[in-house]
Image 1 (cartoon, helix red, strand yellow):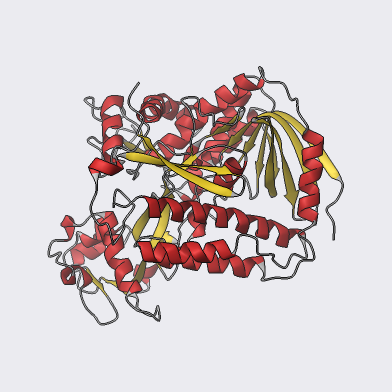
Image 2 (cartoon, one colour):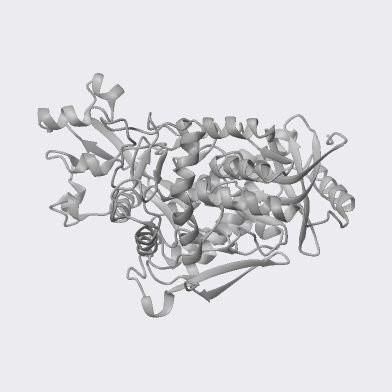
Length: 545
């Protein structure tokens, strides 16, 4: 089987990823006069973490009059255990209040109080109430108006196209190649490219991320010569419903109620077992670690943890019924819960304008590093997505007008096509099997609870996959195999970074180094690719400019 004839497309600014960051960047780039094309491997807008969110944005100045961007910035740095890029933090917290007002202009409706003013909430980690939420607490409250605004701005959409490579010449971006499930091969010339592909939650077996969040942007960036950072920092939510944890259950509201108990298969109260008599004393990261240890202690992986609500008072039951309306009406009072991968703090290193070390290659949103440091506080994900999407889209458009599309584009495109076609007809495991195996080993050995032994074991497994062929018969198989190769590369970056950081900090927990080490590890870990090898080094944390 072969790919169909090369189809060529052109644009000033190519945006890879159709979630909140990509859409906001596209609007900003189009407003600057650029010809903008969004390419997404899934349906634009609908298959993104922004769509799957509750549309909660941290935006100072909308609540308490004493709140401001400086306080928001300090809260963010503290939550990130001071590994954030403070200049990036200042940028997104400074921009988001005005961006929030623009969202309203474009049709985003927020929850309101009795006076019909936006209702502002306070979330742990923040000094003031500064959180606005979508009217229906659904990501569509935010993403659909953004998508419509992008359409109205003249942005072109291309869906279900997988970006196989970035074309780079002399450290300058020239464009990208893509393939579709119907065997089409595309070559897109672009003066600048914005990566807005999100995190890499799906390299783990358990995640509540949208389908397709597999680290494609991080992999594309490092293969293009850009730098990646902080890959050891992955945020896990402690209680999500079901075996795979696809839907978060708000433990903060549940565990605060008298009569709620987390039990294992032996009917033990696992919080009391670990010395927590008062549930308010436990934070999100510690709870995730306690639950995960319960699950890992069973070699057959048959242990489960359940949230038992049978002994709730009638008043508490009434309060909590809104969190689980479908189950509550059926009389279900015991829920299987499991930790789940929620957010990735690590990613592509960008400068104050969102540009990577590869000229003309930009990035915005969860695909980047710097905004959240070692851990993210609530509401800051969408604040960064919208604010940095706006800034990066504008700068990418301005840069596009200054850069020429010169270099050996056609030769590189043909080389990429030849490489892809060579993957057809090979014998090996199915791409689906490889992905499932990778996700499982990453979750059990390189996830919430890690050690040198478990990380080395995972890394050894990952390296056996490096040059392993797969059975590729169709373009769909090819896309899945390329996705797997990106996931494998990202998994390697995560494991090597986690091995190097011999401490526990923020979301990163090492059983063999359980304490934070301020003396040696107030640094970031950068990764670059040289040939086929990953090179890691520690760099001082950026100081405020």
